[in-house]
Image (spheres, rainbow, N blue to C red):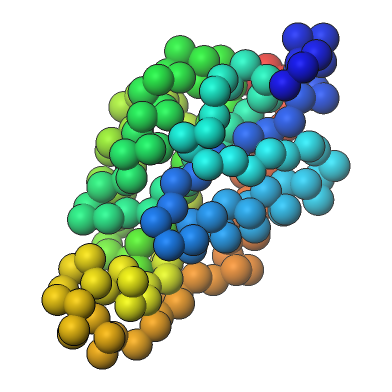
Length: 175
């Protein structure tokens, strides 16, 4: 971004960075971004691997699906690479998984990055599962027998984003 050094922290955008395999988490990230925009704040929604720097942003939301109990590597790499920068801005984390296990197990989903940042909020959302996802887990022939499942609750996702907004949006851009 050109000219970002002159931008005041209060006018800097919020970054919603995400990783996705089949598009479900991208759709959640876009809904979070749209909800944050309703507060009159600029928001950029970008794939984690496309984020070059955190400095242009006043706050960051990071989202990933959970595959085999872990976040996608792109998100872990983003947080690891920009750890020092993420210490200077408010950070919120979210993840999605087709099942929503009991809280202690669910909380472990973010362990891959939770030790690297100090999030102001965490969100856990049910996700979407379809034949493409099933093909990763079971033989492809059997995956075609799996019906599509979409457990995303859009009103809860937007509610979480509305609740997180004041934690991310400070008048002076400070943490």
